[in-house]
Image 1 (cartoon, rainbow, N blue to C red):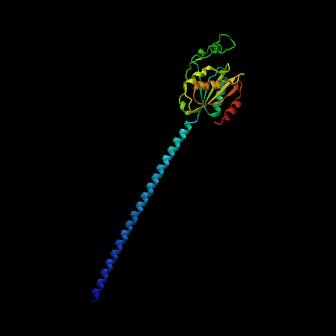
Image 2: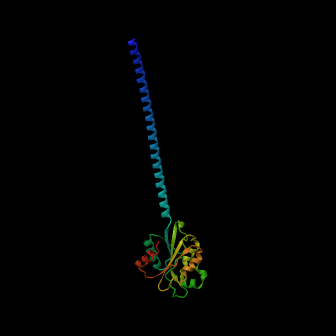
Image 3: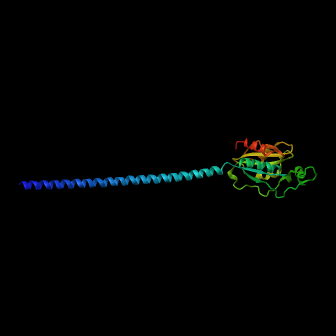
Length: 230
């Protein structure tokens, strides 16, 4: 009888240990599965963060390019004797701007520009406004829409802007642009030159502008350009 009881207790103990072992194994599998799930979530989160960072970086680069593309400055000029050209380049150097020279298809010679001689080209054009339509080698600018601010420079002829600039002004749309005229002369002021060009253009935010003497220094031009707050 005692042997039977001992055998019975042994069988019970064996079943108990087996059940416990299965429970532990089951728990281990569950823990491993949960850890794999956590690892997967962490990996996906990391990948998403990387993708979001890359997207953000790309957007920032594009925004920077757009910002650089906009807000550009252009200095357009016609120069008869070189004075306006020099001032134009001083402005461009100061403001890190692009330049665009207006060149007549039929350039003016020194004799053409001699206003003291009766019958010279400029005298004829002054006396007959129908002769002031001066075709240019190029009257439009590549990537014109990128420029927010446009300077227009010219010598003063008989109190107005030298007429070779007229075709450029009438050939372009200045809507949304700030336009700043500047002029060079030996003694004459700006007069109504800027106002008349504004009327020809019919669009744009035209500023008062500035007249420089024929011998204006680079320092004076730079001081004026820097003072515009561009």
